[in-house]
Every structure is written in structure tokens, then in C-alpha cells.
Image (tube, rainbow, N blue to C red; front, top):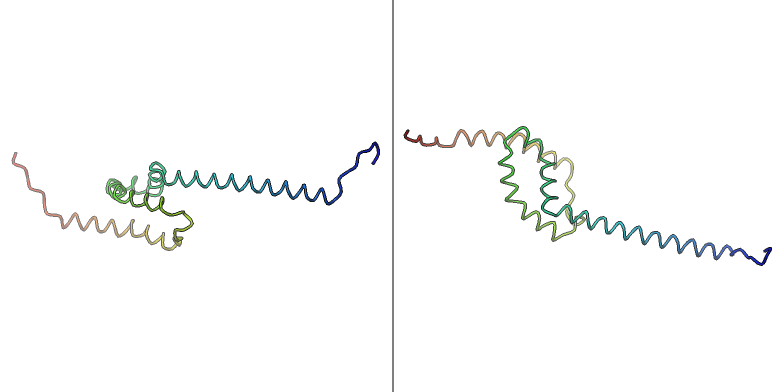
Length: 130
């Protein structure tokens, strides 16, 4: 070219482009892996599990006595925590939408009925002399 400058040939441009693309892909993969690692850590942390529980069952805390749910959560949280630490989220089975809807139905209808039945069957509390 004029002035002694030569432009690289099409082969050199292709090689440089391919190397830049590979580098960008490697950086993107590394960033995605770090993001997923942090997301898993947040989800499996005590505060992350508690926040997910509160968000999932907020209706029950507003419209019913949520203390029973909180007590049950305190019982199962260590097991869920251990499960999430033992396996990666991709290894867990997918819960179908209809299964989730059935669980919600049970929580909303059947559990309410069972609580009412338990109140009826509970023996009366002894009256304190007074």
C-alpha cells in the first residue's frame, strides 16, 4: 500500500476475529458461572431460604394464623438447607405446574378443614379455680 503500510489479509482478520470472539465467550462464561454460584449461595443461605418462604406463603401470614406455618418451617428448614447444599439445583426434579397447584389447594382447603376438625376434637381445657 501507499507509504509502506500494508493491510492484513483476510486470513489474518479472520484469525483475530475468531480469537476475540473466543475470548469474549470465555469471559461471558466465567461471569455467568460466578453469577450462578453467588445466586445459589444466596438461595441456600438462611436469609435467602427464609425470604423465599415468606414470599411464597405471604398470603397465609396475612389471612390465617401464620405461626403454625412458621413452626413447621423451623422444622423443615434444616433439611431443605442440607438438601440444597448437597446437590446442585439442576439435579433436583422439576415440579410441574399442576403439582404445585395441587399443593396450594391442599394448603388452602384441606389444611383449613383439618385445623377446624382438630379444634372440635380437642378436649376442653380445664378451668382454673379462681
